[in-house]
Length: 170
Image (cartoon, rainbow, N blue to C red):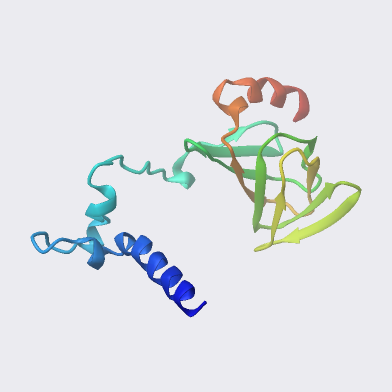
């Protein structure tokens, strides 16, 4: 048993060693610069650059006089920042195949899901598994709710969300 556990530790360290910059370098290559954000053993063959956005500089897409949003999309994730301007502003009951994580950046919101009510304040988070119905109601003016969803919301890509938004946000 002792030999098996020693082997497993050795195997795990061997597998992980390329993940560490010092271990990944050959004698002929300099160590990567931490400030450059490059680990040659990992990044050299895959030179895709990250996408950068100034979220607060983006225009707010007003869906009603009480609800606006900004969003960005990655290949697998959608991030939405909801602006609920008035007490009672509602993101109506809905569900979707995306896992959703919500973070209250400012204000207070009431969340209804599966017969339960949750009151979330600044700094609090709620996580919805896929296909779980949920609704949000602002309890304060100027509530800001950050929403991370995966996979990326297809209806944001194909424009279907805008059609639905005209019907549900009044």
